[in-house]
Length: 94
Image (cartoon, rainbow, N blue to C red; front, side, top):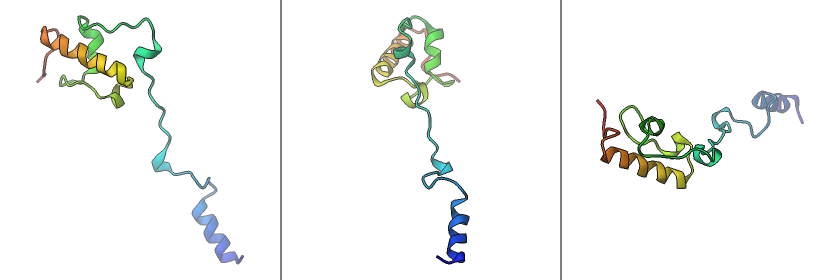
């Protein structure tokens, strides 16, 4: 192999692994709070607890933001909706 081709290969590789790409870093998967802590009880009558799962406008955060599993995300949604219905949490904030 000629020196020209070898230099080009080294320049493109930059002494990094072939599968390394800084755009696609591995992101650590969030662990479900409710699954990991067995003592954690979700209660619709506790607004301080539910505020972790809603944003500043009062919207329910998605699973990718809360890190909850599908089962517990459904429970979170139900608890927030119940708390809104009995006026513990607002439907929307200004």
